[in-house]
Amino acid sequence: MTDLMPLGVPDRLDLGEGIRWADGRLVCVDILTGRLLTPEGDGTAPLRTVTRLDGPLGAVAPVAGRPGTWVAAAGTGVCLLTPGEDPVWLAEPERDAPTAMRMNDGCVDPHGRFWAGSMAYDGTPDAGALYRTDSGGSVTRILAGITIPNGPAFDRDGTTMYLADSARGVVRRYPVAPRDGSLGEGEAFIEVTDGSPDGMTVDTEGALWTAVWGAGEVRRYLPDGTLGTVLHLPVSQPAGVCLGGGDGRTLYVTTARLGLAAPSPLDGAVFSARVRVPGLPTAAYRRAAG
Image 1 (cartoon, rainbow, N blue to C red):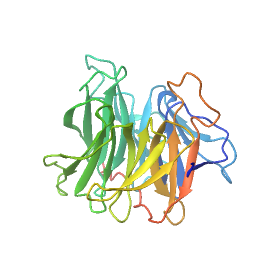
Image 2 (image 1 turned 90 degrees about the vertical axis):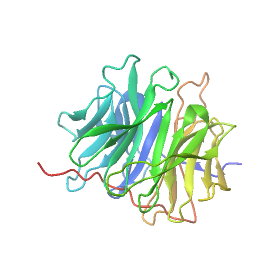
Image 3 (image 1 turned 180 degrees about the vertical axis):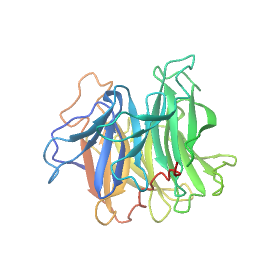
Image 4 (image 1 turned 135 degrees about the horizontal axis):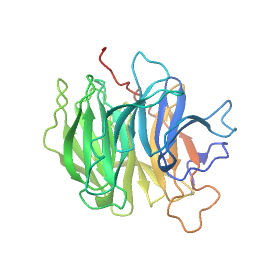
């Protein structure tokens, strides 16, 4: 059974992730090609490239007060992206790592801080980390020993963070101090044994939606960890999820064809479905003046 239907766009992404509903439109990334993309018109035309980097682009979020500018997990660090201009790098903490690294997924918490993870190109165990970018532009390593970080995702008030280590099939839940973004001790929230938890988002009821790479599903977990809803796709590698549209009740899902010996015509497509509970607004990075 298929619950999610492909959008009409003809493009097929190699590694489609980082999907967001921001400033009234949908954006996503194709990580290894370094492209930030958006649908045009009625959503049946090819995706338009908003901007493109020479290296990987893992995720973006809007910057408050600067329309058209994005904070990005890119290359080996974090930068500000404005189409038509050179990236402004805030930090590249993984540039000199002993293993070849790249940034992966990320998002902004309700207090305006940007969080993003890193991973080794070859999936070296425990080589990845989670970084927090504060309003002044400082980029701090918050967690280490992660293999493939995905998310994070935050609840409405930003006091709870969910972070997946996809390689281990686990999503952990952390308490977050609103004032400074420090984390308390994490606990296992869910464990997935038939695939890998990937991109995530939280809805207005506090439930966690996660793409399950390898299982061809998007799952909604209630705040107590109980599995609630399962939506099926006709492809095996969903990677990114967001809730958006005019009323926040459209679930959008990016997928990937990377690593498939014989991709189907729908592998790498962007999918959507209507859901009952709306999502939370996409938070913007609050960059301090100066």
